[in-house]
Image (tube, rainbow over all chains, first blue to last red; front, top):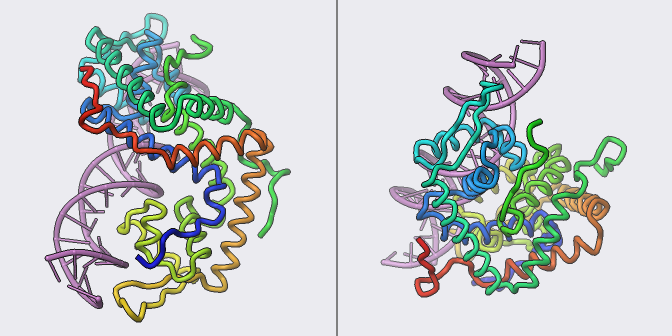
Length: 159
Length: 159
DNA sequence: TATTGTTATACTCTATAACTATA
DNA sequence: TATAGTTATAGAGTATAACAATA
């Protein structure tokens, strides 16, 4: 080994870089816990939302979870094939379907939520309960904060 | 609108979910700032590392930034095509090349680092300086913490 | 035999555009 | 005309396997 460690310069002080590294690490834990259920992160979030909001529309899920309708459609179709959800055409607007968990789907989501809880418990063991709580609180506030794209007035042309 | 907001249940308390939402938001700011330079997040990180570690090997970058060698190779080739770096075959091990920024590359990376600094400044305006500092500190500690994949002893079979 | 770097390739995730059926 | 949902498809990003050159 020619070098012990590399100088990463400003990278550890770049919020995006650190968010990405942390996200990859936590997602690795997710995959270790959920791969046996053949459930990916986005699928988990959609099933949870259907479970908490019976009759929810695809467009509402799309907006709440920032998943493009075109990517949500095959996911929902897959859930229906697997018998996890059913769709009910709305009486007053027959373009939309209300989405509901089936009985199997309900049991399945309960299992998934238990796995999620166990994963958070592992995070607490590796990282600390207070640390995890503070981190999540900060992430919620950052996600709710104003956009980060500069508008035309604010842009600095340092090129 | 049928519903004002959806019930997201345990999602906002799932660290992976919140990390992903936050990362997408911050990356949107990155793209707004760096797209004109035709530089993606991973490319930025590699150029910074080459700049701070003249003569660094591809294998070292690969390990430090968790980028697979197979994905790093075309990136480095692209940098060379763009005149940003040069490669020097090592005398004592002719399989490896030391990587160096060119004069153009050095100026370019300085510009990129200025953009990064401006992006962090926008984050501070939208989110708060203390909040950003605490968040990064927690992310650094989380990334350094133990693995989150359960080993065979620890696994809970709640299915 | 093992290692560095490369090529080819596949898979996932995300994005756009065009279509359908309803409104 | 506009909207909800779908299909097809293309582009990133990331993964594995096989290979060449060198150790």
